[in-house]
Image (tube, rainbow, N blue to C red; front, side):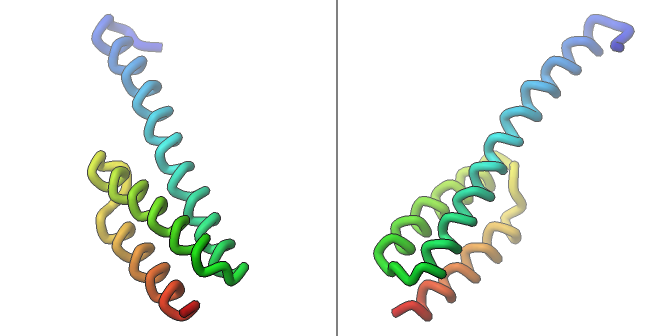
Length: 87
């Protein structure tokens, strides 16, 4: 338990921030799974749509500092390569 008012406030802020970060990263992971499933399913149009949505979500996570830009670039690169193989 926090000993001072400021420490208690920081603890509240941390809880709030942790929840937001977790929600954001969970969305990234779920969309990544969706894109991979769409690629495995072979549906080119659905895979492209899911990938575009995933790229947007990943870029927002990077902009907010929730995901490292190199991690995002790696995911985007690998998915783009997989999408190109569908053609």
